[in-house]
Length: 178
Image 1: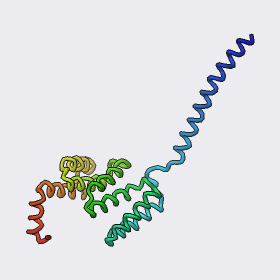
Image 2: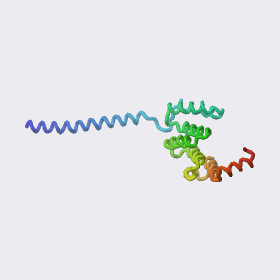
Image 3: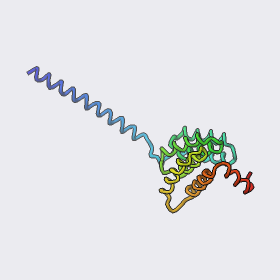
Image 4: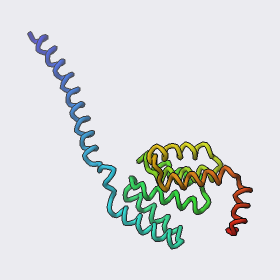
């Protein structure tokens, strides 16, 4: 009888430890999910910093805008707008590789972000990756089949990029933009 009782107790302890482990895993997962905010609820402070950065970029203060955007991302890493702005600043500084990286991060948060797709496509053209830019153009075309500003802009950028630097320079010279 004692052997039977010991055997039953061992079985119960084995299953009890598995049940406790499963319960702890469930509690930790549900707590982690409860602590996360939905993607559409960016921290207000991060959005405020983004607005300040846009104003600084508009005033030509790229370094200050960059600092504000990095702070905005530290406050809320899911701020796609800050990533897109950082990509635009990198392009303005002549750093298309860095811009591509920022746009890629924005697109991991939302693969349908038209501004990120357009900016990344333009950065691809600046790097000479016309086919990759066309891929972005196709994605934009699927999202706005009736046309939209990002579609028009990226189409024009690709056309200029395909013409080559010599033709683009000649076109700028003729247009008086040299």
